[in-house]
Image 1 (cartoon, rainbow, N blue to C red):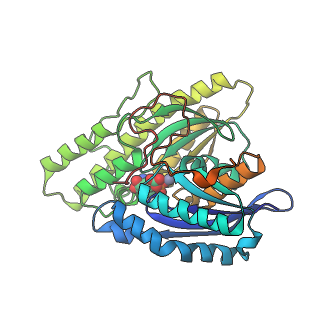
Image 2 (tube, rainbow, N blue to C red; image 1 turned 60 degrees about the horizontal axis):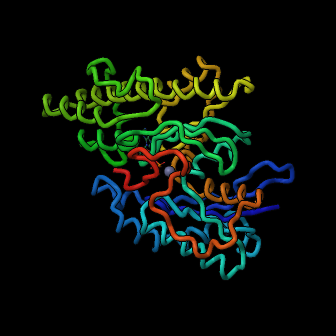
Image 3 (cartoon, rainbow, N blue to C red; image 1 turned 45 degrees about the vertical axis):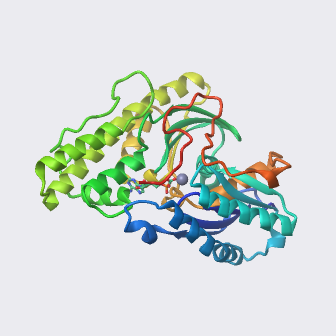
Amino acid sequence: MTRVLGIETSCDETAAAVVTRDAEGTPMILSNIVLSQVEAHAAFGGVVPEIAARAHVEALDGVIEAALSDAGVTLDDIDGIAATAGPGLIGGLIVGLTTAKALAAVSKKPLLPINHLEGHALTARLTEGLDFPFLLLLVSGGHTQILHVAGLGRYERWASTIDDALGEAFDKTAKLLSLPYPGGPSVEKAALEGDPARFDFPRPLKGEGRPDFSFSGLKTAVRRAASELAPLSRSDVADICASFQRAVTESLTDRVARSLKRFHEARPDLVRPKLVVAGGVAANAAIRDALKTLSEAEGFDLIAPPLRLCGDNAAMIAWAGLERLEAGLAAEDTMSFAPRPRWPLDETTAPIIGTGKRGAKA
Ligand code: KG4
Ligand code: ZN
């Protein structure tokens, strides 16, 4: 039974987890500790890299100990140590990867440096036992992209944002409206009481042939509406949020539809292909609903991991490590692996702005 310890410190969650498979080979999460730093950053309206790195240093040992004890194992029972090595904030990556190297050295276990995006990409295999290939929509604070996941380590980027990430658009909108950080959940909550038809915000790139995403124009439109109405009443804020969320959702689904069609053309043999949505924004109910409707209309099944595994966590890192270990894809000289603040999953497709970047969420 392979057991892997995972460590995640690339942004503002300090996380450790242990995963394995049961006797039938079904993936199992033995422990999953996520310590959020949200409160430490809230006053600044976004992640402050120096504060994040310091908080990881202070918390990581305890979080790893808790993950091992929750799983009922010691380091001796672990077969590999996986840690996020990029993309992300360099300070946090150094803390997590160096700790993993030290643990690997003392326990003489293999070290698995993991691409954070691969963790998100493989989560649905951990939670649903999903087979390759599938289409992945990754929507987080630092990324918005569509990947054709053909197999382990075989990722082809089909679309990407040309400016802001979707989570970033939510965070910036929240900041403009003085809603609390992190912005995504605040905007979603305010939108529940609002009128989505009051403001006719743009649907960026809607109807265009290229499959990419764009969200920065929307932020400008929100800023204009907010400054014209200032001071804003509670219902103005709610209406702006509802109208923003509707515009975002319509732009997103129009863009995703391009890649669904391409997937059908590329894989006509698959009767009911899967669209997986992952990343923090996948927690948004309006976006999930719209993606479900779109998937059904296009003959796809939508797979959305449970909410606690949508955002950053270490179970997904441990799982990616376990898959690599089992597939014999664990590189040998990993002790000299340096953290990579930028690390696109698909290194062959020409980068567009916003790709491979995973910086502060704000
Ligand atoms: O995947 P994640 O936890 O961290 C990154 O890798 O960035 O995603 C965080 C992002 C933030 O931008 C946050 O505002 C957004 O996901 N988010 C949401 C919701 N919950 C989190 N966006 C929209 N609606 C939500 N309910
Ligand atoms: Zn993430």
